Image (cartoon, rainbow, N blue to C red; front, side):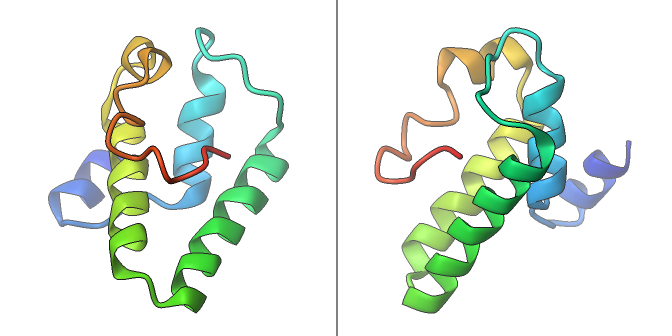
Length: 90
């Protein structure tokens, strides 16, 4: 419910929220745990900020929002990665 409220306000889900969603999906096999997922996600986010790459930051935010908004089966099918080929999923 909190994620939905934040998204209605236009807020991008955090790495923690996004990783929680990914790890809660039984359909998705992830080679990581919550801490590693969040660390990788945060590192990627910081990298795009350091590069001052607005396009990658926006794409990354859209990918996190898509993951949070989509059903697990949709995420597993790759709907959130179709337009984000140059982003690496953590």
